[in-house]
Amino acid sequence: MTFKFVRNFLLKNNYTEDEIYGTTWGDGPRRFILWVRLECQYIKQVRVLIRSVVDFTGNKVDVLAYSMGSPISRKAILGGKCGKEDIGPPMTDLVETFIGVAGANYGSFLCFVSFGICNTENGLHCESKMLENINTQPTKYEARRVYAIYSTADNKVGLDCCGTNCSMIPNADDQFVYDGWDHEQIMYETLPLQLDLIKRA
Image 1 (cartoon, rainbow, N blue to C red):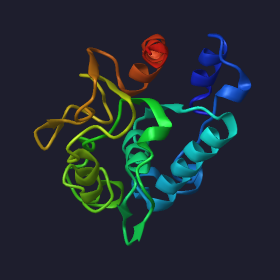
Image 2 (image 1 turned 180 degrees about the horizontal axis):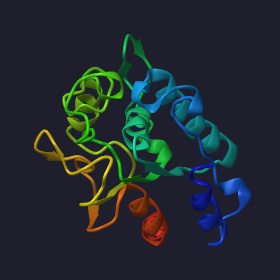
Image 3 (image 1 turned 60 degrees about the vertical axis):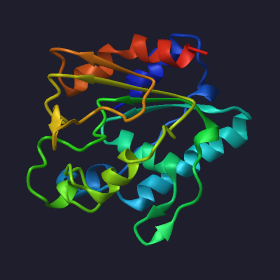
């Protein structure tokens, strides 16, 4: 329900109900956010959704990934080793466009101590092994076209994660940086841009 506004925006712009699919990570309100991690079960859930939509529609998908959903979706597409298991091969050829919006791709500036969601194994600490895995690939792997959208005033992800911009995506086709919008505003206010990027052939 948090992203119902995205669905409604797309419906107002010529999308239909059978063209919009969504999932989340974590278990909603059952666990306090500080104890959620980039867990393999969430990553595999995104992989299942991508494969299911491709199988159902017969088309590649466009992925809009928000906040912590960006690194989770990037790992889902990358595949490979996740913890002690291999979750499968890359899904790059199934994704036309990937857009990370306010993404915690290099972590969060709030994670200056390693614990819970900020752990260095599969958390949002800038030294997380999971984040290192998705950010050290030699070429882009998320989709045919890859974009990052973020704000210099993001109050949850921030700007500096171990000397790297927290929301950038390595090897992206383009990065769109805004000033003054907080974490939620950058997601809401850039919907027209997100749609335009999806429509670019």
